[in-house]
Structure formats: C-alpha cells, structure tokens
Length: 345
Image (tube, rainbow, N blue to C red):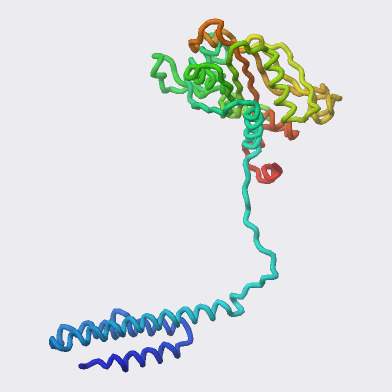
C-alpha cells in the first residue's frame, strides 16, 4: 500500500500542534483537506488500486480526515481563545455600561390610554371603526341636514370611490368618530356603553390650533331611562379622575344636531384654580368637550323603536386634552417628531 496512514496522522498532529497563528492553521487545512490537498490525492487514487487495497486505503483515508479535522478544530479554538484574551480584546469591567435606548408611547397614545382607561373603570368598552365612511353614517344618521356646511367639500374629504350602497354618493374620510356610534347601534341592541377613539380628517388650514388630521374620543351609553343627570355624574367622575379631585365643572347650553339637549363642558383651570391665568385666558375655565342626550332622530335612523330607549353621548379632542393638561400651545408639535419634545412625556 502506497500510503502510511499512521505516519501521516502523526505528521499532521505535529504540524498542527506547532502552529502558532490562525493564518498558518488555515494553510495546514488546505494542505490536508483542500481541493488539491493530501486527502483529495488519496481519494483520487482509489480507482487505480486493486480490489484488496481499495477498502484498506478508503478506511485509512477516512480515519485520517476525521483525525485531522478534529485536530484543526481544537487548535482553532485554542488560538481564538488566546487572541481574544489579549490586551487588544480585554474588557475593563470597571467602565460604565452603555444602556440601550428604550422608547415609550407617544404623548397622544398615552392620553388615549388614560382617557379610555378612566371610562373602562366606569363600565365602558373600547370600540373602533373604519376611517373611510359613508355619507349616511357620517352625516345623515347623525341628523346633519343635507345643506349643513360640514357636508360641503370645503369641510370634508370626499373620495372618488362611489358608495356601493348609495348610487351617486361618494365615500369620505370620516370627519368625526360619531359614525362608529351609528355602526354599533345598528349592530347591537341596548343596553351598552362604548368609548370610541380614533383619527378624523377635516380640510382645515394648519396652524397652532388646527390640523387636517387629529384624534377624537367619543362616548355613547344607551339604555332605558337614561337621564341628563347621569351624563353630568359620569363626566364629573371622569374629569376629576383625569384632572384631580378638586376640579369643578360647568355645563353651557349648546347645539349639536345629534344630541338634544346639548352642552359644552368646561372645567376649572387646574393651573390657577379658576382665578385666571395665561392658560385659561384669564377666564378661569377650560372648554374640554361637547355632550348631550342622543337625539331621537338618531335612534330612528338606526331602527330603534320610538320612545323605548334614551342615551347620552359626548366627544372630545385628544390633542386638545393633551394641550390643556400639559400646557402645550401648538398642535403641530405633536406630529413634528421632535425627540426633545417627545422625551418629556
């Protein structure tokens, strides 16, 4: 037999043991295991051997390959370990660590969670709905007449896609979260209490107090024998939870097509305790939301039996609530992604 495998194994072991760096070790790997290496030469000679020699040479070559592979791997681990423990790779455990940056919820998301959480404690369930709506859900079912200014294209984003249920009418980007109330009333029978957060869209010129996209939160409670006193008690509990136990409230008569009677809700300024300051414009009061008893025409539009149910509804702007709570004077800063601002909350 041409190959002395015992001698080859010993020589390979000696050369590998004497290797002092990874570059030399790689050269030895190529010498023994490479495409033009010793093992390749041995395997290539098998067809020229006799029938008696082939199994002996094949077995010896396999054992040599396994042994060389093992020795190379062991030596590589030793060399890598020794190089990583040298001065260039040493770790000074006395140095302070580098803490990873940890993000947090956006201020508007925090306000939404806080408001929804307050109403969840009062028995409400959080619901949502589509941002693309029909004219029926966004206007007609809410008792908003066809000639109302809000239905004009200057005040609503209409889409070119036609409403499949009403020929000749276009879909639109919802201008309020109230259409979700219509969807829920058509889907469920009272009693129920829901809180609906979400984005709304209006083609307003952007300035310190207006934006073409902002967030609203609507609330709706429908049951038999719901009274305006229930609405006042509910909103009082909510405002005191959000702004503090000493918060005072007042309800001013107002008009909304979808509620009757309707009111605007003010709270005493939490900065000056109602004495008058720059936040409240020296008035001592801050306007926070609109509310009222659900108009019977809304119940009629969703198919509820006449006179059987009553309900209360309210709505507020999330950006406005955040601006009031934290003394922010420009709505644009919420969407500018200025980390210096966002890190404060």
